[in-house]
Length: 333
Ligand code: NAD
Image 1 (cartoon, protein in one colour):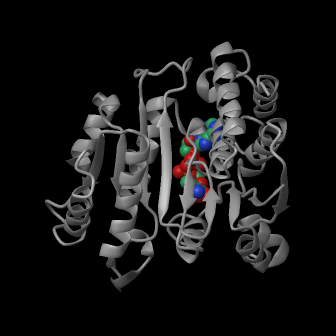
Image 2 (cartoon, helix red, strand yellow; image 1 turned 45 degrees about the vertical axis):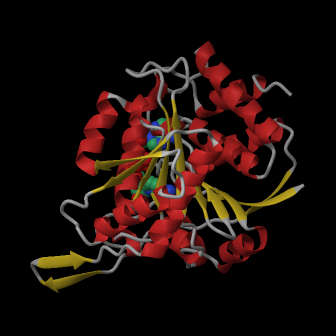
């Protein structure tokens, strides 16, 4: 029996979290969920954005499945997602992007993984107004922060027989910050002579990804570029409804899909649950439950190939619940 913190989040979060719980249960994994929540809805009922119970539970279980949490744009409170990643030093944001057969997209053989640095860069939130008409923000990159995410990417490549790691940067312009990240990549690469280090400037990377994504295997980059490239890559394989993710640190892991709270479809039983369900499968794999994890992946693939119960974003008309039930039906124990 695993003890796992469940943070449903807001927007579509509770719907896809419910779906994921049901699929994980159907896989036979024995999980005792500790459900806590954070965000705007919680603020309204408890008077605090992140109740202490969230931190207490995370510090006890050290592993969580988390739905998206809305962040107000331009003003208002800072991102709870970013705060949790920083507080618990979850430095590696790992996002596998893989074609699911049966989804109608221009490329059928995308199979890449993004390692996004998760604690530094412009996301440290050190911004200030210089005067009424000018603002500035700090972009902080450290050697320590860069080394560990780049090592994580090379380790993954090494363990999974990948021949190339692509480091994405803008060191031609940001010579000190992105220059340092690039220099760290060159240093780490020396320890992996059998793995090619490919260096690509971020603007070119966007073009390369939409022209020929299957040339990439493992991508490692800084926080902001990683955030943007993740959504771009999601678009290559069918959208945000299908791409899972994980925030991993030395002592804690929080699993969450790439997508946000999707306020445009929240509460309507329209959200595609696959991204969160595959995030749950990633979590099972992390726990060592690789057979159950694989059975969930296979059930998702079978459901998409059957094409009967797929959500609107993938061209179907099924609800979140219909698709979830179809995935559960397809689980082979
Ligand atoms: P979003 O990912 O919520 O939505 C972008 C588009 O993708 C929308 O059209 C949405 O309907 C669609 N989409 C997303 N997930 C889907 C799913 N599972 N099924 C079907 N369609 C899906 O991005 P946004 O609109 O830029 O952000 C909305 C809010 O989410 C913002 O407050 C943002 O800060 C927050 N956000 C949170 C996280 C997180 O909690 N980790 C991540 C990203 C964005």
